[in-house]
Length: 234
Image 1 (cartoon, helix red, strand yellow):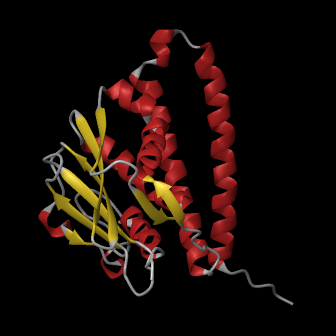
Image 2 (cartoon, helix red, strand yellow; image 1 turned 180 degrees about the vertical axis):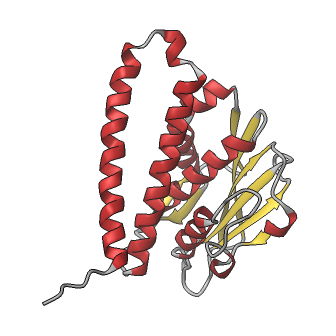
């Protein structure tokens, strides 16, 4: 009997193995990094290895997440989270690269104790990827913002870079992402498709969660905005 193998399952297994390989390489690099002279630790090549390995790990996480979503294995676990704590954790995960690049990352909240209702793990993955992209394009500054507008909590990440191309502005829909390759940048749109799918998992009581791109805001460059519905109290 010939055994057939589902390609998506095979791909997911391969991606999982690749993540283990990257983790092993990362541990070996950290050990070597600790033994390097300080000048090498701060070198552009060392930062390149750290940045690109992080990007590769993020892409593999996206592929695994999309596989789980396709097979109904990815279920959000939303809870109330303070945005100041959530944003500070995000900045801390990128603090070494921010410091090396001399990038200031401000956190601006419309009110103290502001909370959102979301799956912290899923949303952290989305914003980790967005912040990584912003670091590649910004000049000197990033800004994380949060505010409440009626029955939604808004989160935004803005930079002072060149901004998004006009054709990318507006609400992000799954049908518009992940299906073509940009001939100029080589981008597949996978990251944006993943972000839209993760945000859409936060639809609540008939109210859709939203992901949109615009230029301007807290800073004059690109701005990624996420709107998350809040549970009804009645």
